[in-house]
Amino acid sequence: DGVGFLGRLQRQKVRISRKHILESAVKVFELYGSSSSILEVEYFEEVGTGLGPTLEFYSLVSKEFARRDLKLWRDADSSIPGAHVHHPLGLFPAPIGPDDIAKDGVQKRTHIIRVIGQFVAKAMLDSRIIDLSFNKIFLKLALGEDIPLTIESLKRVDPELAASLSKVQGVAIQNEKLRRKLAALEDAEDISVDDLGLDFTVPGYDIELKPGGRDIAVTADNVDEYIHEVIDAIIGKGAQAQAQAFREGFSKVFPICDLQAFTADELAMLFGNADEDWSIETLSEALKADHGFNVESRAIRDLIEIMADYDAPTRRSYLQFITGSPKLPIGGFKGLNPPLTVVRKPHEAPLTADDYLPSVMTCVNYLKLPEYSSKKVMGEKLVVAMREGVGSFHLS
Image (cartoon, rainbow, N blue to C red; front, side, top):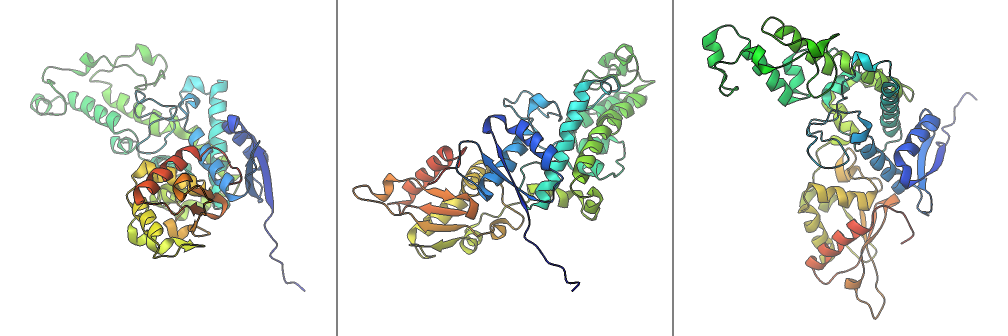
């Protein structure tokens, strides 16, 4: 009497369409995001079930949340082709201006960020790997930390804009000798702030920093106010609504204040941005050879050498193929559960091993590898399998 039972965790299975990943994800997290049941995902017209399709779902949705057409995030370089924002320093919300607050578009943006908060918390609760890289300043804002409104803080979000504001500040320096020594500005000797043609709008966005800002020129007299307003519009009040939405969404799953014991660097790692060790030594220790192979098998040695030579994009493709996620969990290969297992895939006469592609059971990190005639053939077949084997889960 009085002794509690540790029951089996409930599982919530959902079936979604690959053609509408983002819409499906939003609906799933609206319905089940706050549930304590472990979420398992299947796809329409596919027989695959369990961990593999679920991990791929978290990976695909991570990518969808970074789409340019959602207009959620700052884009470091919009000239780079592709459907997703370029964010070398991590995802940081695009600013929301005073005029936008009352518009439905803002409600939609904050709603999606609220869902992203749920998505991240649910992934942590269910021990799922996600592929979202958040800017550390945004993580601090989401945790409710105060960020100093300085050019130094802005530099961690947008280094180019921070450098530009520093130059503008330099031009405004009244001391002529100091101004002439500012090497950052080419031919700046005879330039005044008025000559720069700036107005009180957020650089790169059609958002006024103050009422009538488009008609207010930046001068030496108001340049300090301009710089403060730009910084505030980007990492201050311009990101408050988004940080609040992320915080609300996250806390629907478990209180975000529970994360305050972690630093921004540690949180970035928890969200799937840890450095990965692909050395031959680590792979040799983590990889389990079975059913026709052992650690001394030539095929296993070739596979480890091939894996160790992969560049970053190929590593992502390989992990996506093997595990359903393009990233390793915390702990790297040793953190995979079950461990990465490689078994010999038999062939049937008159075909030879070189006529087959590798196949996988993503739910158990299980690679079925033909005993190829050479390391070169193995490398080529793995590349084909990575390219052709993603995007569906069927019986192999």
